[in-house]
Image (cartoon, rainbow, N blue to C red; front, side, top):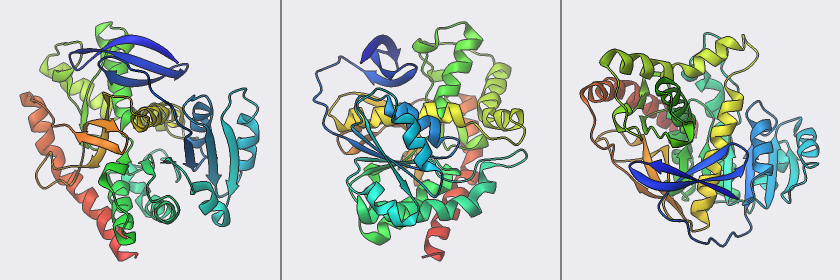
Length: 352
C-alpha cells in the first residue's frame, strides 16, 4: 500500500491507496495492521456500477476472496477480471439458486444491484423496482451471513437503508453498526468541486456531507471544509446546488445510456477500503455515511461523519457547528428525508 500525507478535519493524517486513485480517509498516526483473510460479496456485479467496482475490488490488497453475484451475465465479468495479476480469488454466482453461496462467509457485502436512473428520473422514481431488489438481497444476507457488514449503494439510499434495517430486524439479526448507506460519492464530488473552485489539490480537501443521498437532502458543510475556505452566500448556494445535482448532470450527459456509474464505483471502492481497514483494526478511519442515527431528533437515519472499527460503525459523530446557510438547508431537507425513511419502513413491513 502507498500512503500520502493529508489534513482531515483539522488534523494531520494519512491517505491510503490500495489501487491507483482509490483513497480512504484516516486521521492520526498509522500503525501496523494485521490483515486477515476477507471475503467480499458484490451483489449486482454485472451492472454499470458493479463491473468497475469489481475491478477496483480485485485490486484491493485487503480482499482475499471476491464473490460476484448477479441474475445474469456475471460469469464473463468474473472471467475478465480474474486475468488481472492480483492475488484476489474471484468467483461468479448466477441467479437466485446461487445467491446463498455467494454470500456465505462474507465479511463485507456491497449492494449496487438495481436499475439506474434515466433522464428525467429522480432517485425516488427508482423506488418501486429497487426497493424489492434490496429487500430480497438483504434477506439473503441476513440468512447466510448475519454478521456481515452491508454497504448499500442501490438508490434511493434514503429509503433502501431503512428497508434493509427492517428486513434484518424481522430476521432477528439487525445490528445498526453493520448497515450503511454509501453516500461517499457526495463527499468525493464536494472535494472535487471545492478544490476546483479554490485552486487546491484534491488530496488535501475534505468536505463533510450530511443529511441524505438525494437532491436537497445532500448538504455539504462548506463551512467545515479542510483546509478552511470561504465562500460568499451566492457561491455557497451555487456550489451546494452543483453538488446536489451532479448525478443528474451525468445522467443527462449520458443521454439515456447510464448514470454516474464510474464515479459511484470509485466512491464505493473507497468506502469498501475504509470498512476493511476498520475491520482489520486500523484506528481513526472516518467516512461520511447514511446510517441509523440520533444526531437529528426524529430522524432515525442520517448521514454524518462516522468512525469505523472492527464491528462496522464505531461512533456516529455530530454535525458540528453549522452556519446560517447550512442551518436553513438542514431544516428545509427534513420533511423530504423523513418521508423517504417512512416510505422505506412502510414498504418493508407491508411487503413482509
